[in-house]
Image (cartoon, rainbow, N blue to C red; front, side, top):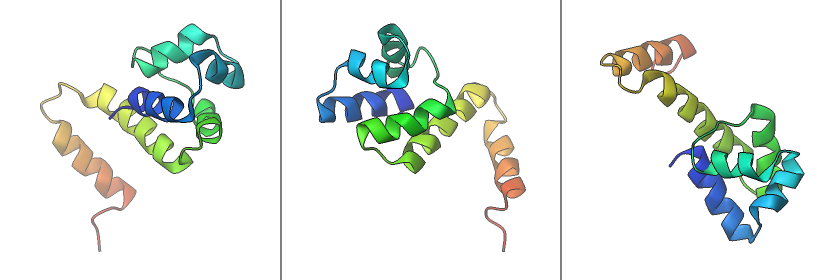
Length: 96
């Protein structure tokens, strides 16, 4: 699930309209609609506010947001998995 799908799911669970979420984020309704459809990315600062507005986990939303950004860069690359393994090592994951 990408960030837009997750945001839409949380928004619908809360019974909020697009325009209500857009007003809280101080963006126009078309922009939040494009975010939900995966046509636009949102800023990190919006993630924190979305978590608050939608009663979602900030950590989960930021993780999905980061995953979307990574996917955008590596999608279609034949060496994507190798690159991700290098990143894991650089971040210190998988090492003892």
